[in-house]
Structure formats: C-alpha cells, structure tokens
Image (cartoon, rainbow, N blue to C red; front, side, top):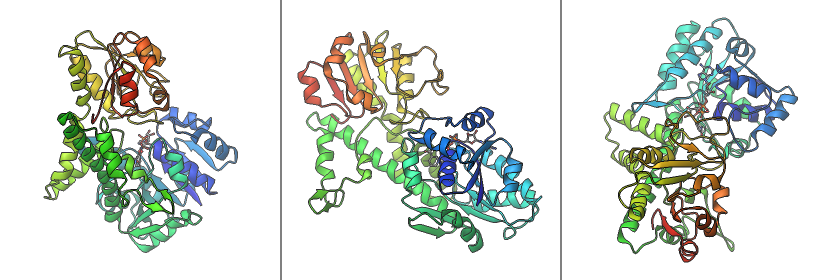
Length: 450
Ligand code: NAD
C-alpha cells in the first residue's frame, strides 16, 4: 500500500521506516526542510539506535522518500497517518499542529474520489479524533465520514528503544469510526503478528493516556517510598525494591528462571521522569478529567511528586556542601531524560540546573548525545558550560549530580572522581553506583532513596 506519514519526528520517522520494511511505499512529510533534507540523505534528524542504518536500506530500495509536499504525497496514497507533536501548553493539550495537518489533508481529499483513510497516531485526548479531526476533515474535504475513513492508532514506542519497540510491537490498537475504516487501515499491518485491538476512537485515545499515566504513577510512587526511606536514615530504597521485585507476581518463576519484566524499571526510585510524553500527557489527562468534572487526585499527586523530585539532588548537595551553593562548581552528568536518546525535553537535569544557577552555583554539564549540534534550545541559560568530556565536566568540581544512567557513567570508578574533583561528592540520581564501594573508596556518596 502507499502511505503518507505527516510529521517525521521520533514517532513518524520510526513508523515510516518500519512500514517500508514491511514492503509499503511510504512518503515522509515534514514542514521542516532541514529534517526532510537529512532524511533524504539517510540521516535521522534525531538519535535513535539503529535507525540510520535501516533508513538507508529502505531509501536505497526506493520504499521511502521524504518531502515537504503534503498535497502530492496524500494524493498518491491510500492512507495518511498524522504523527505531528501534541505539546501541552499551560496544562492543556495544544492541537495546533494536528489542526494544520488535518486541514491540509482534507483539502487534498476534496480533489480525489479514491477512498482514503486518515489515521491519528499522535497522542490526543478522547474526543479529538472523533470530534475535532472529523469536523475539520468533513468541512474542508466537503465529504462525510464513510466517503473517507478515520482511525486512531496510538503509539507506544519508547525513545531509545524506538526501533526495537516499533519492529516488535506488543499490541496494535486500532480505534475506528466505522468498520470499513478499521479494516482498510489494518491491511497495512497484515504481516504483523501481534494482538490487534479494534475499538472505538475514544477508547483508543484513552488506552494511550492510561498506559502512560500508569507508568508515571509507578515512578512517583517509587519516589515517594524513596523519600520516606531517606528520611528515616536507616532504610535503603534500593534494597526495598529488591525485596519487593522478588514477589512472584512481579518476577514470575518460569522453570528455574526468574523473569524480570520491564515494568520493574518503573518500580524503582530515581530523580523523576521527563521526556516529551509522560509529563505533558498526564497534565493533559488531569486537565481533561477536570473539564468533564472528575477529580483526578491520584494523577495530580503523581505530577506534584515528580515536580519536586529533582530538588532532592539540591537537598543532598546542601547536606554535604552547606546551605550556600554560591560559586560552587557542580557537574551534571547527563542532560537527556533517559539514556540512549538525545531528547532533553522536560528532563530533570533542566530543573536542577535552573535551581543551581538561581543559587549562584557554576554549572558544568556532560552528555554523550544531547548537544552534538550546538546548544540545546531547552537549556535556556548560556551560563552553563557544556563540557566535551566527562573529565572536563567534573574537573575541580565541588560535587557531581548524576542525572542520566548512560553506560559511559556506569563504568566510572570512585578513583576517577577522587582524582579529578576538588571534593569527591557524588549525588547518584539513578542509583547506578555501589554505595559501599564508593564510600569505602573515600567518596562522599549520596543517592536517591538512601
Ligand atoms: P516530534 O516533535 O519529534 O515530531 C513531530 C514532527 O512533526 C516534527 O518533525 C515537525 O516538524 C512535524 N510537523 C509539525 N507540524 C507539521 C505539519 N503541519 N506538517 C508536516 N510536519 C509537521 O514529535 P514525536 O516525539 O515524534 O511525537 C509525535 C506524537 O507522538 C506526539 O503526539 C507524541 O505525544 C506522540 N508519541 C511520542 C512518543 C515519543 O517517545 N516521542 C511515543 C509515543 C507517542
């Protein structure tokens, strides 16, 4: 089949490459010409392990092309998938990009008599596809649903593992406005062996928000347990999680092996969640609940806990260095919201850096991916030094705050911190180091949950 994907970000491009490997002809449409040029050269405009290699392969086979010409692409396609951003502005979902893309698609539908299915893959609140998107499509195409199809197909891939998740989906959720829309759209997934859930548009939209809210809730719950553990001074939350994870309902025994499901990674204390999905999606969900008269108090607490979690690092710094951080050199290891991505949107590192600068500290950062191509726009303050090596970042520092669990950082030994820093103070926001090894080696070691 021939498919247009509007938006060539993490979701759009990864999906495009996957659909091309399934043998479809895919047009990647983006209104950012730089991104289009990069994709045409076989370079993903963001870092995602393995993506460049696969992109080059499908380009070579002529199965994928990138363009800013939406009209021509949609006209030649059977299906158009919308994968543009849906940020949250002032707690509310911002549908500007969705509306612009939908209007442009609708104007093309007006010109063709071919049955065409429009699919929303962006994360949108219940009602957006069946009301907002449908209304725009009908208005500008001058057609009614039935003459074209409409589906909602939420995306569950994780940044850093986008390719792995997309090539091996754990489920496909297909929200459909009518049966014909769903069955026509599902043809693109004919070769994919995984459970397929056909449901209405509203439920498909809600499945995505529920999945994200559940994982965010587990993280904030784990961080609340960390705070209780820290405050007693006698409990290490890492050992608490070891004890909890071994519950056979969480780590099932299969033969002689204990399975360690991925969800355990969310039932663990850390510096807080960030990224382009959890923070914005759960804020939008709370707002939506408010609007329909539901008090989402649990999810509101999840947001509150997460808002203050990065400040635990500041508290630890003050416990060791004293209340006055003025002119102290603090090294931040890791800017991205998690390892294996270059995405620093809503990263806890940004919250910590902002507070440190406000307290007069000097901040020096390192990240293996976040700023290969200049100053990240999310990092507003140019006062921050972006070091080119870990050593440059921590040299003569009064303390290190480890924010992201990059593999590079996991390998660092206590000796390395002692030799390079003014004071060997390590605040471990991800608990990647062995507290006994670090403490016995003379490092002043503090960690979340400790
Ligand atoms: P992104 O910001 O990386 O990419 C969006 C792309 O859309 C950009 O390249 C932008 O230039 C392009 N765009 C915007 N308006 C356009 C228009 N009118 N025409 C053509 N191109 C346009 O976003 P993303 O991270 O890929 O997320 C896309 C959607 O998927 C969001 O709703 C997000 O919540 C959801 N989602 C993201 C992830 C993730 O891990 N990033 C996972 C699941 C779902």
